[in-house]
Length: 337
Image (cartoon, rainbow, N blue to C red; front, top):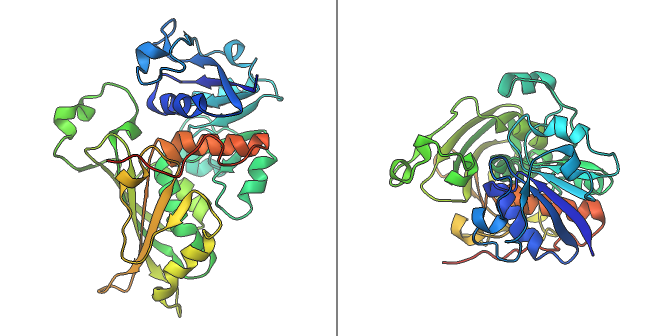
């Protein structure tokens, strides 16, 4: 028997993707699944695509149901994870896919989320400088937000290298509908989404303080866009070159930053990222160009919001926590068509 794993919130999209990845993981064994509204149901009834774990039965999400596992994934709505995690034994390793433990600034939490401020955990984006070692030495990790992963991967190396102005960052980030969760909301109905693009939470999106915290950007304008596709994120980030810096070298900065990364790929010159190319993978594809009119650096990043943006990222963090190969159970190859 390998490392025993519990997934809280396994009935949702991120939780279901976690189960799919964990089912083929060579060292992790799912022993407990919980899900609001699905208690007593088999996994196969809620996620008919998951045949290998179809006979697992959903339990109520309680500390008692989770505390027997070696590792717990919390794929729960905002505000639901902190109290639950606090009741788990210190020896149990925990990865929170939600937002409860991401922010270090209590005032930013109050402005964008409200409610009680929870203790910040180690931030789960291994590709940031020094972060891989911090994750490996932690017992509890705050997984990244989906829009935030794409934006931070695009921004952080450029600001760290002094190539871009930290006070002038503009992000337009299109996301598939699974990013909004599984609730049957009217604006997410197929007839409402198909053939339509719409902005949401414009001017006050919750991932803004996380992006600033992780990338060192100081001023961010972000426009999230709901796109008519089930999954995927395409972020377009426009940055003003730092004073005295040549924007033409921006792509070289990204190439150098991610040269040794197995999940982050800077594409060949002339090739733009596509969400379809990252589908089902833990990969992020990036490209940087210089806008001919404004002289701005424009970085595009595509990833699967349920992969590198959620469940895949969580498994990557789990591998680091447990001292396993970082790629275990994960793929850099997308599914096409």
